[in-house]
Length: 64
Image (cartoon, rainbow, N blue to C red; front, side, top):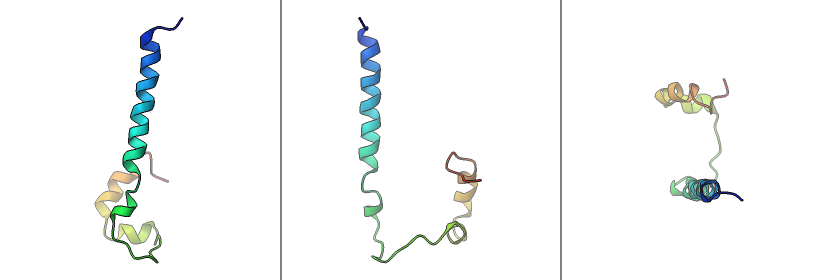
């Protein structure tokens, strides 16, 4: 028989992860983008966002 704690912890983790997924839903919709907007590539973005590059390059999201 499993203890209440061993059942409670996974349940709480699932609830927390679900909340994170729901919180991110519709994020891109909050911006007023043109209907024909497309991704222009990392180099174009980094022309204006040099500080973000420094943070991103050391994160798990980096492709380097």
